[in-house]
Figure 1 (cartoon, rainbow over the protein chains, first blue to last red):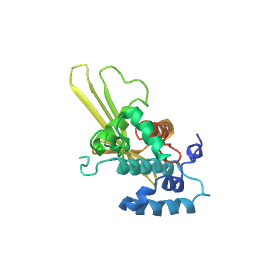
Figure 2 (figure 1 turned 30 degrees about the vertical axis):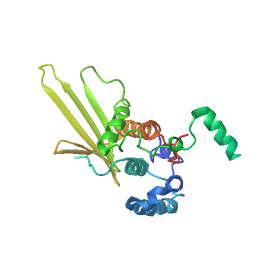
Figure 3 (figure 1 turned 120 degrees about the vertical axis):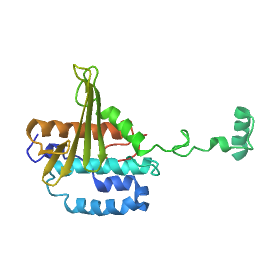
Figure 4 (figure 1 turned 180 degrees about the horizontal axis):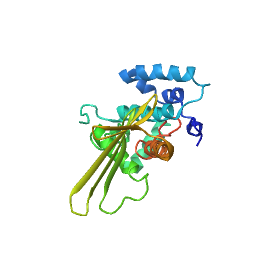
Length: 76
Length: 145
């Protein structure tokens, strides 16, 4: 593994994710994620740190959960 | 063409008036309700707990992504005196690194092998959970066929 975590950089892209999941655009979470996607596009040519890649995985998982789950019950 | 189709359907199912049975169920309709976040996290943890190798006999382990920047490790076992021991570790992704928090007073930024192993586990977790819990392609987020 390289020091800056480039081994973890893969083709998981915010932009692709949003294209594949247009339904999230209509949710309130969508607006925040679109802003994040724009940041990602802006930073697309920059090297990502390990922390940013891990954070991205967490964000994607959180987005998918919000799409799939019954949000009337929250985790304590 | 419609008459032929109707005739074929009549031969196959006998009733062509009520075609509601052909309508695809909505997502979640088969189970009656959508899962809660807790239920999703439990499914994710079933995958997460296996990522760090075999779980010792008598131990109970959970590993899951709680939210965008928090990962949780939970380990529970009985010591030689039969006393239940539990350990909860939170890994918080921050700009400066990944902060490991145990209890109320132990906070350290992880590094070296511990950091490398955690990052590998998180990547595996993401890929397996996206495929096996959410039936989505980890690269695009699209539903798998």
